View 1 (cartoon, rainbow, N blue to C red):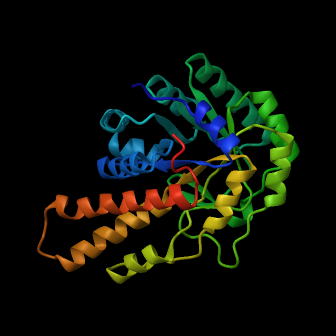
View 2 (view 1 turned 120 degrees about the vertical axis):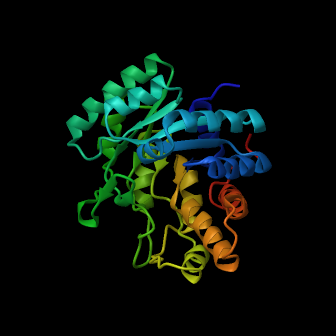
Length: 309
């Protein structure tokens, strides 16, 4: 079975008022944990790779690992580039077997973002690959994406319409209050649902995307801190808000930080309790299970995507 695009996934998600999880992958155990959860939950699935992950694990290894996961589970999987910084990396991923790419021109002025996005769209569509873009700037840190809170800007609904019409992009990541990384809200978290509803009404049937949507579950922050190190567990985006966003045309929700926290908490716990064990299988096995449990939780309680295949 070849990789699929997100087109049909998003049509079903929009109609069913749920979101498809897009989970960042870096190694074999993370991929296995995610796909095993999706298989058990019978949930649609997007696996996404950042530029940092490509540099760490190499493009060919990640593609082959996802191919193996798809063959092992018989799941339809969309392989997506997360936060492509320029045309060249998007082209490389299109040519290298990805079925979806994101071009992130949000750091550029509006017209430059349109020009760059349109260039990627034209190339990718010619190869049967779909494209995600971003309008607005999320605060926070994710790999090479770093935006100070003072520089964050929410997506303008009218600009969103113009942007989609002029670029022909297949989905749009919007900024309504989520934030990249673990260091999120210091006060009461709020998403701008009025803004989201306006964008949805102006772009009926069009799939929207939320980045920076990890909930930073405090139980995993506590476990990480209990067994070594110190992570400042600022409150993440509440799960009920993300669940609600899926009813407003948000068809894709990105999840990365929560996976890292779950895996790190499991590894730290195992090594603290078994200091003489140096077999990577001993601590990566439970870490893989922690990933699976986290993803299953997201599919059931945040994305509402369980049983949607």
